[in-house]
Amino acid sequence: MSFEIVTAPIDLETLKNSVRDDAHGACVVFEGWVRDHHEGRSVLRLEYEIYRPLAIKEGERIIAEARERFGPLNAAAVHRAGLLEIGEVAVAVAVSSAHRDEAFRACRQIIDLAKVRLPIWKKEYFTDGSAHWVNCQRCLMHGEDALNVGHP
Amino acid sequence: MQVAITYFAAFREMTGISNETVTTRAQTLEELFREAMVRHPGLAHEPAALVAVNDEMAEWHGSLSDGDQVLFFPPVAGG
Image (cartoon, rainbow over all chains, first blue to last red; front, side, top):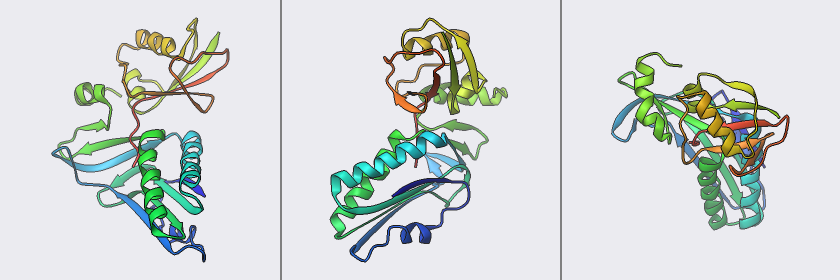
């Protein structure tokens, strides 16, 4: 059971092997990819900022909660930090269990909670040269002006 | 009392600093954030912002102790 933060590309085979178990007949892997568009705008690349100590602690808590809810299963997740190009894997979650239902449901819960609870921030760089922090309302209003005048 | 504040992501860009140590009379984390908005006029309140103290998630109405390490998290967006 582990939650990891990495800067190098995510090794999906290693992730999958880490949940392998002869008693488990189902393995569900979710991959989150860097998409080339967001709300109609063309995205060039993404940057993830992560507060590692708390992200790992909360990430492991989220995995433990899935085990408590869905029963015996193996789960592991990895999130990338830093600059990512279109098509790269930003996050991956692997879950194995005796049968598929628990694996699907646990995997879904882990990725859903990871998106809302972990101290991870995503900055989108658009093809027009602007950038903004995702989910940050004030940034949407002020961020682009700030960037144009070279504000930090 | 004295507390250390760290600003992340959008909050760091809004304040122009990563961290600072402040002397405060704030009773709650929310009050501490309001004081920060006065010191840093670029800092804006975000409804989905989160706060942590000494590497544990905390509540905005939670209290402060001398020497606390306070982390102000703008709305998160993992995945």
